Structures are given as C-alpha cells and as structure tokens.
Amino acid sequence: MGRVNPLDCVGPADGSVSTHLIRLVRDSALRAGVSAETIAAVHGADDATLTPALNRIPLTSLVRLWESIAHARPGPGGGLAVVRAAPLGTLDTWDYLVTTGSTLTDALHRAQPYHRLVTAAEEGFELRADGELTIGFRTTAGDPAVAAVVNEYVLGYYLRRAREATGRPVRPRRITFGHAAPPDHAELIAAFGTADIEFDAPADSITFDAADANAPLQRADPMLANLLRSHADLVLSSARVIAGPLDAFRAALAEALDAGDPTLDTVARTLLLGRRTLQRQLSDQGTTWRREVDLARYEQAKSLLAEGRSTVTVAARLGFTDDRALRKAFHRWSGTSPTRHRG
Image 1 (cartoon, helix red, strand yellow):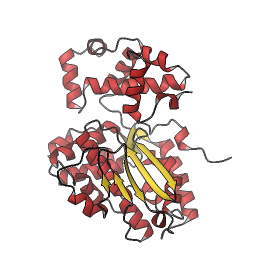
Image 2 (cartoon, rainbow, N blue to C red):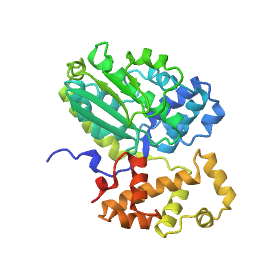
Image 3 (cartoon, rainbow, N blue to C red):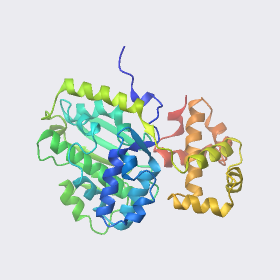
C-alpha cells in the first residue's frame, strides 16, 4: 500500500501552525521592537505553550504576530529580518524535507504534501516545474501591508534554503509580489540578488532557473528523506491544536450562517454577550466581524461545493446576490474559481 497523501486528509493540524514558526516570528517581532505586552496578548505565543513540539497554534495567532512586525517595521525589510533569523533547522522537519532530495525540484515536490508541518493548509503553497522552478505562496493575511511582510519572508526563506541546499550562490530568475511597489525596494534587490522584481503581480512567487533547480543537493539522502516523511506523517496525525479564544465564536457564527441568519446580534445572543462586547473581544483578538464572516462564508462555500452543490445554490445559501458575486468572492479568497472545488 502506498503512502497516504497528507493533502487528502483532514486532521488535527488543520487551521493551525507549528510552534517552531510561531517562535521564529515571535522572537523576530521582539527584535523589531514590538513590546512584550503586545506579544503576551497573542494566544499561544508563550514559552510554556510553545515547548511541546506536537502543540499546534491557531493560524490567527501567527497572523497577529505578522501584523505586529508590519506595524513595527513598515516597508520592505520586515520579512527579510525573519529570514536572517532562520538558519537551516529552525523549522525542524520541514527544513530538512526541502533540502534532502536529489535536486531542489525533487525535494520540494516530495515535501509539498507536508506543508502543513509548518503552517496551515489555508496558506497556499504552489509549485510549477517546467525546467525552471517556480514557488508560489498565498497568505490569508487580509491587510496588504501584512501580506507584503509575510510573502517577503516566504520567498526569502526558499531562496535561503536553495542556497543552503545546493551550496551555490543562487540568484532567482525573477520575483513577483502581489502588493504595490514601495517607494524604495533597494533592500529587496540586495537580499534577493536580482532587480527583476515585479510588483502588482497576479501572485507572489520566486522562480529559479533550470541550472539551480536541477543542481544536485549537498544533503541528498533518499533514505533520510523517506524517514523524514514517515516522521512527518506521525507529527501531523499526533498534533494537538491549542484551542483559541475565537473557537466558541466561530462555532456560533457557523451555526448562524448555516441557519441563514449570520448577524452580529444573533451571534452575540448565542454567546450571551452584548453587541459591543463581542465587537471588542474580536478586536482584542486582532480580527473583525466582517473578516470572520468572510472566512466563515469561504469555509461553508468549500464544503457545499465539495458536496456537489451548484454555484447558484451556494450563492443563495450564503447570501450572495447571485453566483457571479460568489465567483468574484471565491477568486478573492483563493485565487481560483469555485468550480475547481466542486465534488
């Protein structure tokens, strides 16, 4: 029997991120000047919670940490600073999965199904290999300034791992960012080693030329890679998600959405809270009513489409004016059309 593809499984790690990534971003935020009090308010970012390796932290906590870096260090450089603080091994098993294949292309293709080792499945990780190798990433962070920091880190991370794995002074073929160009991006040019950086692009991506993508890796070890994948299967199946303060709210919101009455007053009554109290609690967790409703509609839309429902039915069920509005929202959510998620 072949190995089960983790991408096909729903497990305890869904919607959460590794303690290794939380610790890396938390410590980087502190170095960027974010106050200890701000960090302490982030659920699951304390040392006691981060010590057990199998603990998983809600994705919302990671987004709040990225937000703190974006606010403390606006403009280019915030994500690059996190990359500089992440030598090989910082992200534990994931780091070695992406560096022990025969080539960079081989390693990343074999590692891709295990991307949830480090971050949530919602954080999109895409590969395209046609001689060149392109790695794309899509963050769930809604604020463009925050998304810019996240994607700067992710693309910088894969460049650093490519250099460490190949032992070559790898320079990307090109870099694309979905956000607008900053007034000055000299720091990005210096870090990525190329001026071929496109802004306002359809996706955030880094492309390596064929020579680098197919160069033999210094740490190539098929037996070790296979052991790492077995270990990754065990980690994902044994993960323990630390319940977040938003869990009860999201359950009530999902119930209200399913009943066709997803209003702030309805959810507040379910939670025995006042309208303003609920709004304040959401703000304290770094989110808003509108953002949470948007995320809940996305999850409901995916589930309904997976059941084989038509886009017209899903649009009506979730309160969209028509299926065209649903298609537009779906592209904003995932970068794809809803038909790709039909069962």
